[in-house]
Length: 192
Image (cartoon, rainbow, N blue to C red; front, side, top):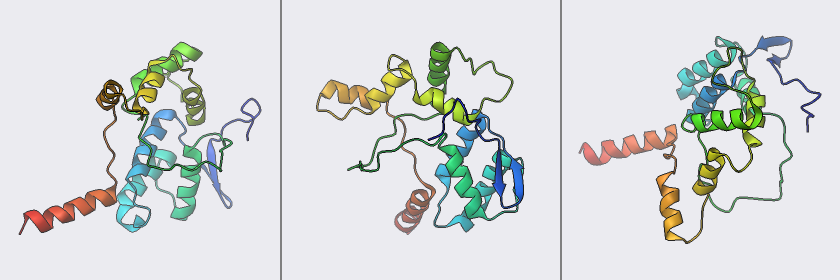
């Protein structure tokens, strides 16, 4: 695990001998994350437009490198500083989304400001994505966003708590593959 006190977060990607500066501001990477969610990794040839948008956000322009290597670097960078993960724990059922950077951004910005004194709403210089993630993942439980996330995670039997959870639930994200499937089903059943 990297020691953040001694390790500057990366500001470039290397592909062989080629070095590319990257846009590392947290706002850029929130958009990158949303675009990565839209990719159908089994049919990348159908997602050329999304891939070009991602590369333009990250590098300023599409680059001439192997797309799988580019995606490996981008998805690795998107996770932030390497963390220790418990490999012995497996999820037994799909997890609810507990936060969405775009939907919850105001609550996140306020929580970071209140906890660390960093006002991301007034910054003119880039704030590194990895530092943003460190601030976010280390918020203390009294912040509104943390309470929202706790409520969204509720899985008990209390009817009022379930209603409260459902009231603050995030909208479901539909993958591009699921959307294509639904469109095909609509064509079959509604265009007879």
